[in-house]
Image 1 (tube, one colour):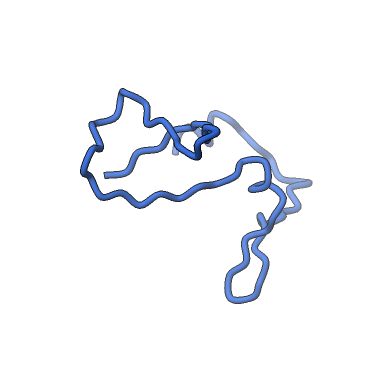
Image 2 (cartoon, rainbow, N blue to C red):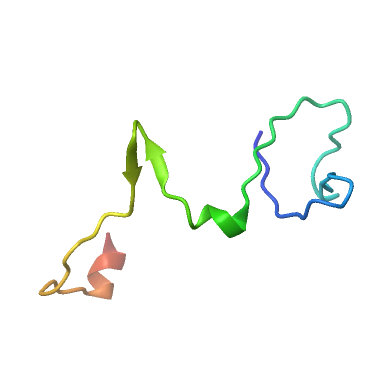
Length: 71
């Protein structure tokens, strides 16, 4: 099972798990911490290559909302 929530690390280096999630006492967990302030600054590197969003030249394309929603 996977849960996701936002929290702040307290001064004693603990985090609070929101009460809406099942009790975790004794449960083995894998914790991944993502610093939201710096996550946007660093490109993701895979096999030595920086990944980025693809760029498409959409000039001249016709976009029709009704046609797109019909799919």
